[in-house]
Length: 169
Length: 169
DNA sequence: TATTTATGTCAGTCATGTTGACATATTTCG
DNA sequence: CGAAATATGTCAACATGACTGACATAAATA
Image 1 (cartoon, chains in turn orange, blue, brown, yellow):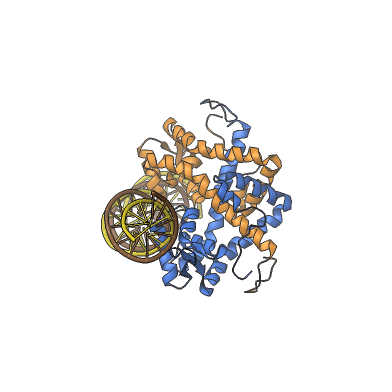
Image 2: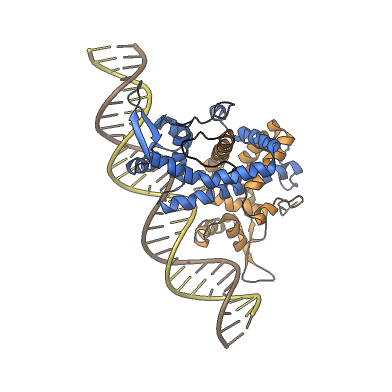
């Protein structure tokens, strides 16, 4: 956006670099979701189930409201997949201690198993990419993606030392 | 994947770093698609239309088969959105010169308008992220994402000098 | 006590992915 | 040349996961 946008004038080199970044995100995301999608299909689950299992695994005792805020979907959409995961024993809910309206979410052992299966190909893919690219590149990758994230609150999820405290850490 | 996966043992620091990378991709992709999605909704279009307009804009004279290979969806899925874009005058098709079975795809002026509108928020977001992160970080971002992409053919789309030759460059 | 909040649920719609079957035009192979 | 393979299009049925809108309940808060 440092360029003035005049139609029928060649895009600048800068524009080409930015458009390649956009395309990189498309291809990387496409491939990064393909393997878990295949595993999910065997359970008759979809990508939405993966997202729920991922975030509940990362942040045990998360409330339904927090999950809605992260996923940015409606509660009706969430409740379909969350309900399936609860009924099939992947997630348990229990009332909040201070606020008894809240339903705190947690993976069961079966849920942790599923999470490990789903994340295994993603972890392998990202770990291999990190290894090939090197530590400096990883730092750049983090910096750029953090700045692509719109909300400061969401960026703060990645502040140093604030990793996903898994229940058995 | 340099770690041995023993259940009920704390994930390593390495694992935490990789899991943060996975999560960064989720949040960045979520925010990176939100603004174009809102514009698409005003046209009664969805994200699939955006992908088609993006790639046809980047690679004019692309064939239907090439587009299918990039999007990794079925021709039936593609034909629904492609048909809408053609009937509404965003894309024109014409027979290939050498192979007359092919339908070469190209944006109309109306299509280029739509492409610019849809990509504007994404270009602004990525350009701002690049600016804030710095040139070295951008190089790292590219390196990591290239290695996340599974197919060498798709990675080669980003070889130096092989930018998307827009028709009016 | 009245209101707001956190959550759940019913019902209907839409976009976009899938599979499977079949059609047509064109190119390529034996 | 004729048969097979290829590029594309189309019909139909179905699943997933978004959406809106309306309404319900329990618990916290003003």
